[in-house]
Image 1 (cartoon, protein in one colour):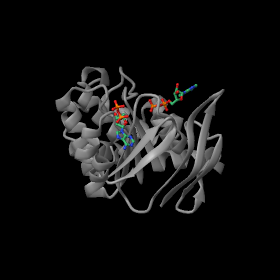
Image 2 (cartoon, rainbow, N blue to C red; image 1 turned 120 degrees about the vertical axis):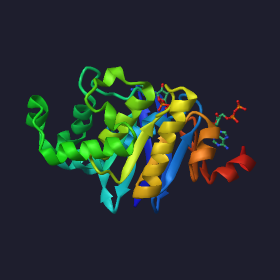
Image 3 (cartoon, helix red, strand yellow; image 1 turned 90 degrees about the vertical axis):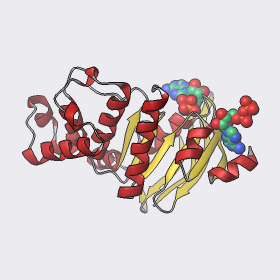
Image 4 (cartoon, rainbow, N blue to C red; image 1 turned 60 degrees about the vertical axis):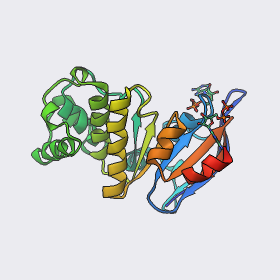
Length: 236
Ligand code: ADP
Ligand code: ADP
């Protein structure tokens, strides 16, 4: 499904990701762990093409993702939607409009500028919010919500794109333990029930152990561990 082959990202004299190779053969719930600066975030951003790899290949279902341009590149970015530590919502905009922004690539900027969305899109946005337990927040401004609710809005925005893969860059690092649990449970459910692959940068081994069936360990830009969490116990 996904094959990352010898991907490297160099910033000036600093190698953020160093010759990383891994593949996803079937849908999984995958955690990436490692210290701050290990290259986790750069790795995810390269997969999504938010940043371009210096070297290496990235194949998705046999297609060369790093060669995609324009509309095809944007289509890839919808297939592999990203969520972020700081949620990246539009704070003053209502929740449902934030979720609809997930369709920006598909519906174009006019829909966004004039907030004109087909009823079917709006209904779908509400359904997704409902599934995440926050439908009643739909008319509120994003900034009025708690962190855990805001991250669920970001997940809803990602789901609007019906992605095969969700890349989560430190999705719970800004949240208190209770909200962190709600968000991780939501990601786990999206994997279990929809069969989507989730790849999440996580700060702690505990979270990876609890939620993931596969753990990638990064250190100094390299992948130094790749296996089930129980193996990590013996390796670490
Ligand atoms: P992690 O997510 O594991 O904390 P990052 O991927 O953010 O690690 O960073 C890996 C390395 O790349 C760090 O040394 C960081 O300083 C460097 N780095 C990340 N982004 C940039 C950038 N835009 N410009 C220069 N260096 C960067
Ligand atoms: P310390 O040096 O503080 O004892 P480690 O070097 O064991 O810590 O681990 C540092 C980080 O690397 C941990 O926070 C964990 O997320 C991650 N880690 C732990 N074990 C492994 C491993 N076997 N492979 C890759 N990363 C690991």
